[in-house]
Amino acid sequence: MKALLAFAADSPAALRLGELPDPVAGRGEVVLRVLATALNRADLLQMRGRYPPPAGESSVPGLEAAGEIVALGEGVEGWRAGERVAALLAGGGHAELVAAPAGQLLRVPASWSDEEAAALPEAAVTAWTNLVVEGRLADGESVVVSGASSGVGTFAVPLAKAIGACVIAVGRDRERIERLLPLGADAALLFDELPERLLEKVPGGADVALDLVGGEQLPRLLACLAPRGRLVLVGLMAGRRAEIDLERLLRFRLELRGSVLRSRSRAEKARLVAGFAEFAHARLERRELLPTIDRTFSFERIAEAYAYLESGRPFGKVVVRV
Image (cartoon, rainbow, N blue to C red; front, top):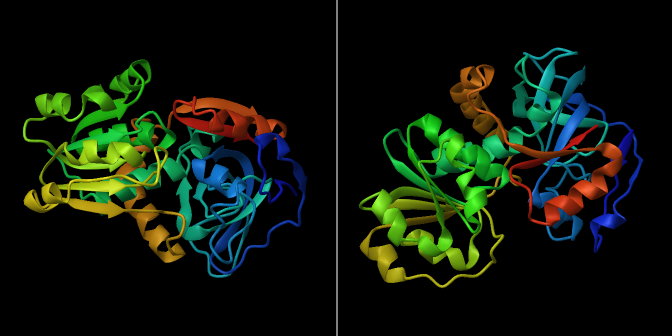
């Protein structure tokens, strides 16, 4: 099969496709013929040699893919060859074929394109995990989503709205974050406007903050939280260090929780995928929940796709058609 070769490069221009052995379905796995895949910042970190795949997983980058099942491994039930699926992966998605855990598959609605399906798993399951499982967001609560124009952010906003929350989208660029309003955001604010403008919109503060950027913005988000508020830190695009007011953390009984998805066990990921699917299946069928795709590239232009992602310009997901 053709695949993006394992790399540790200084530039996306160094990326190249090559031939690798076809994967074989292990116990509990299916082999998927990949028709589309999507890029994530974790792929960029892996490219830099800073985020290796978990032990036993493919060294080929790619945390999500969509296509058709071509083979079933031992013990797989409930799936059949030829079925269209999207897969949450720990690696291997940037290839023509990938072995995927059956518990991490999502059925693709008939009305969805392969590109839409490929853009779904990582953004959707990350948003679900950190809004609902870690952040315990509930109907009637409020949530602030930082870095809301990212692939995860552009799905977290409509997902939180579907849960029944008041959603405040936050970012650095006014024009970009205002594009979140049609996706379900009740307000779109700049980081520099926090916490004052948020407290005008949500008197008393937000119940949950989904932080996709970290760094110097973390204290601003903590200042936006209501008593007993929960902040879930998922990304570090703004840096790995922050100075926070511990007295506020104590006085308001705030929760600060870090969260990653890739390194979780297959069993835990299967539970997360199942929880999201139960909530979202009908909404996906009705196209009420959709990933936002910024741009699509051909497989032969995957180096350009990586360079575009690294530029920081995408609004939503960068997809590669295989």
